[in-house]
Length: 345
Picture 1 (cartoon, rainbow, N blue to C red):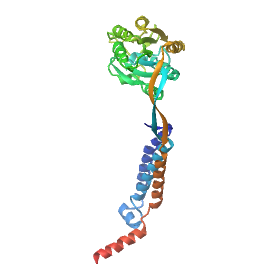
Picture 2 (picture 1 turned 30 degrees about the vertical axis):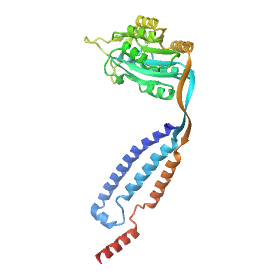
Picture 3 (picture 1 turned 90 degrees about the vertical axis):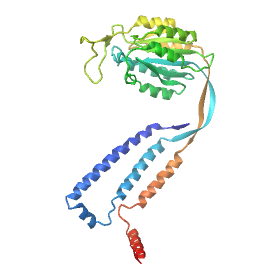
């Protein structure tokens, strides 16, 4: 397994395109300045020792050095020893509603962002457990297969937005069915689906999917995001709200009755997600009550640093940069003239 111990240093690579643009611009200004003195071809004849390509070569070498140096600072490593480790935990699939109604701001900063904050805090509380993400609107798909890699889980969580699914709707049944089939085949372990939605179910099959999950011993908990009074749905990039065919502002409301019904069928809890931490405490407590068993996870216990090869390559490039002169070397010119004379003879 390959990884970077300090991946934040890879952001230094963003300097490279900026430096390229700066170099191109400076060359453009230099050519403009030379044209004010005379014809470029005449100027090149007056400066026969000036190389046209060597400055570009030297600059490219320095860009490579900067890029490699950022990779070196990030500390590339290869995993060398994999071990199967038994951990005592549970498996959780989070099914997150990302329909446009989740843009509503009756919960601050918005329904979706509040839900993502809750999930992030939930992942922080997990230890020897496994977690996976399913997102849904009119369709559903697996955003993150079930894993014990919580760092990756939070990265995937950050990238969740309604733009991931074009078809609008709230396909709760499809999401729950997909979550039901996303757990590992290991037996004797506590499993739960945490359904996070505003409850505006526009698709059939939600109740049947929850019943099927419960038959397989999976607990279904429902977190209802929003307020019963609801709120308008902001339109991104515009200071307006979603309107119906008659021009009236659409108000989206949390359907708590439907959420409670699904939670009862799934033998789980229902909690409203508002601007307090009540939902966070409730779901954390529910997970702690679940039966826990040994989960087999493959982890890398040893990593070898790979920076040495990069350091040598940087050193070689710096030496090459020192050896390449910006001006033509007269010695090479004399050698070329001598060779031409020999050929003529």
